[in-house]
Image (cartoon, rainbow, N blue to C red; front, top):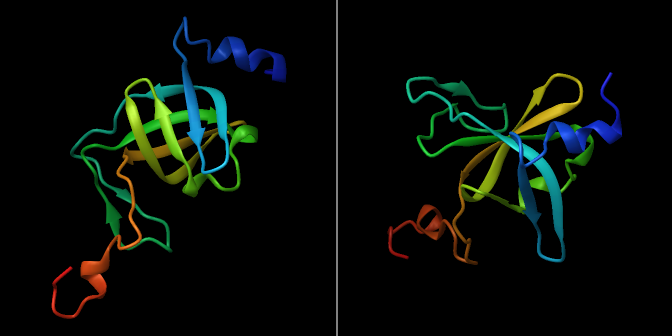
Length: 124
């Protein structure tokens, strides 16, 4: 049985794990995790009910972390892993103790982010 003291060895960055930083406005959570292989480009996954339709992003990545370490405000945090900075768009359950954060490349959001969707003339 995997206990709390085993997570450090299971996600050891010297073996097959990596350092994961969940960066928020006020703090940064340093975690141990593991980058999984990117999804195949010909695979589509169904979005949650709150999301629109099918998701398929070529730049999508998955990072696995212990479920107990996932903060409630994960959608508001930037995820930094060795391969780059990402935004978490979804969480998938991987067994009872682990979750996979679905990541897309990070872009800073401005106060006018998505304004072209709300402007009837199409001008920003």
